[in-house]
Amino acid sequence: MQKSGVVTAAIAACLTISACASAPISVAGSVLPSARSVENAHQSALRTSVTRLEDVYVESGWVHRTRSMTSAQGWMNRLTGQSENADKPMQRATPVDYLVSIPYLVTTDAGTLIADEATARLSADLDEADALIRDVNFAAQVLIREPSAVSRSSLAEDIEHLERAVGYSRQALETFNTAITDIAGGLDQTQLAELETRRARLARDAEALRDRADDVAQLRRTLMTGASS
Image (cartoon, rainbow, N blue to C red; front, side, top):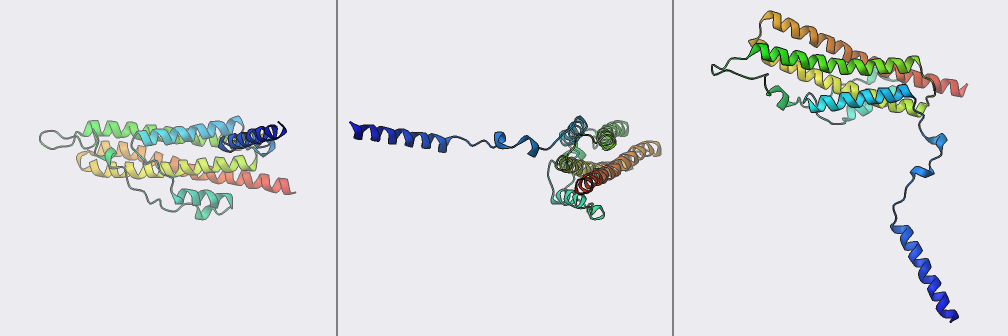
């Protein structure tokens, strides 16, 4: 009888060990609150604006959703204060589907470009792309002005988000440049000037994103200096 009890206990122990081994291990609950990245409302707004930019840019066909080593290297360079080395040319193919979609290369039976439709569509896309960039810029500026309750680790995530936005905006700019070049021969000077004005504004605002990434990196370094003093 005693031997039977020992065997029963051993079997129960084995079943317990087996259940533990097969169960998924969650580390979320084991992370101490102090080890988690602190994120304030401004950081949340920044990351949301970047995610929306990415989603719209991809869905509209202006960019490919890829994470390049160039973007990752830019992020690391900004963390270490080497912003002058953070911006190298991005090696990504221009989205072809967008450039041949209606109405960019819509033609009549005579084979001529429908200039008004092409200009209107491209103008609207340039405006939408630029508005999303300006949303990210604004969110970053608010964070920089009011950096309360932030940690160095959470700011590193913000820099990563901004680096992605920089990469996407530059790739979109390349796509728009190609689109304008492709249809330029079928447009008059007024239409070309209209598109160029929008393109130049997009380029300017995209460049400002790089400055915001540098600003957040500087804010992170300032926190590091303050913590060590």
